[in-house]
Image (cartoon, rainbow over all chains, first blue to last red; front, top):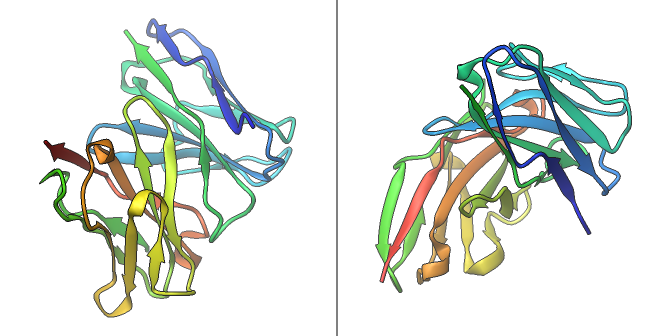
Length: 113
Length: 114
């Protein structure tokens, strides 16, 4: 089983450029999430989705947009990248909320110069 | 509001020694609690979770955690550390107070000294 797959794994952007991070899951999970991980700050939720066609803001949504057109895919977009968005981005999925654990992808390391 | 606090951003233990990683939560109702492990350059993997059944929860790789409501704690332990346990460990909380979303602690980096 592939689980949760993130592409790309690494990317370097110039300030002001745009890009899309793709997350794909093959577990038929309803819920999907995007987190960013920064040193000393743990994981912070950017956006999430509770089903196909739905999205919602998390803790740190500014500067990011998301789409969930298909159940298995959750896209994270940066319209105009800033150095403050240099981070490691993780996608996760779960069967539902509450006591369901998350399955994480292996991460995308993004550097904005 | 619900949050989780991990005491100690870095913990070092000798190989074969007890591992104790601390996690305290704040919640008005008993939440769901999780421990995740992150090996270098990898995503997070679920170690164990507490979902209001047994208060002592056993996980993978010999780890266990005990839910103590009176202390609002969910500390992670392993009797004997192995070199392969070196990783970042995250405590997470979910429940009614968070809208059933996860909140992660800031992580504890475990170093195992040979």
